[in-house]
Amino acid sequence: MPEVPATPPSTLVRARHIAMQEGLQFVYTGNVRHREGDTSYCPHCHATLIERDWYQIVQYRLTPAGHCPDCGAQVAGRFDGQAGNFGRRRIPVPINSV
Ligand SMILES: [Zn+2]
Image (cartoon, rainbow, N blue to C red; front, side, top):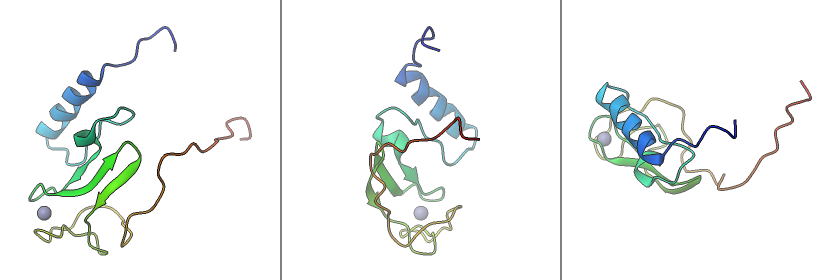
């Protein structure tokens, strides 16, 4: 849809804040560079758990069992003991092969 302008980043940030005010715990801005909006925070003590810069993980603080290291809260999801190294890269998706 090239005729539709891109959503302004400020709209994405505002939508993220609205979702969090409504009680969603893990809301991300996505597809824009927004460090705060790319970061996962502890739903209990709000400590930084996974800090991302675009697709690069710059800080990974979850315990191997998926707990916050500061307050011990269990974080929903499945986690590895350490951050992966996915980084920035493109992965081709064959959309005509199905
Ligand atoms: Zn915590």
